[in-house]
Image 1 (cartoon, rainbow, N blue to C red):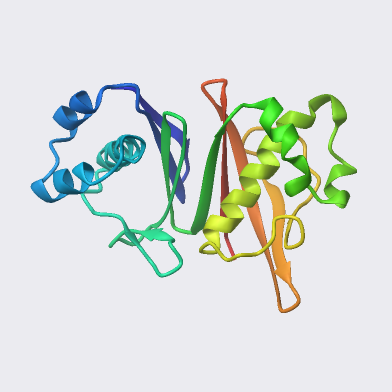
Image 2 (spheres, rainbow, N blue to C red):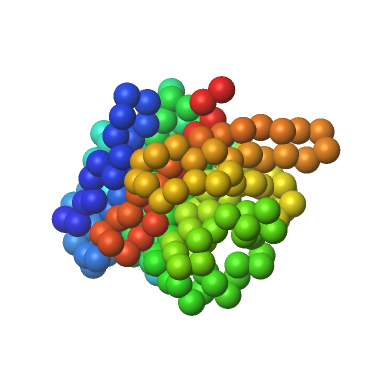
Length: 210
């Protein structure tokens, strides 16, 4: 089974991933889902069904035999103590668990696409310090940070350009990157981290450690 384990592990946070390259039948045989979960799987379209099986595989690896629930803002949670975040990209599904509030994002490396949407999420003050020779790499990480901030805050409809900011950083795996969310009544700072998965995915996680 293509578990991509221990994408990150420390005393507070663990992230695991599953690359869903098996057939649905192989995953179902491995998971041995309850009748209730089988019924849920059968209600989903092909893409969502495969993502659901990848999610269940990650939870099994974490020894968490719980259903995932969602609050009124669409933020996932478990009936357990740890905070939860979920992300998927193509055939990759990842779960982040932490003692801190967490938002994670994984994105397949697609330089053309990320450059095409740059104007939608890169602020002028961020563009000033992004090295041009590695622009697409920085853009993937910044996009992931802002997606993580969005998820961490429960899908609040802040604008990526006007309410999310990433401070200057260098591309070093697992080194803290400082970022913030703000509006006229609110300002909160966070710590973000990233790593490269299978040489083709950018994994980013954001933590509220305050």
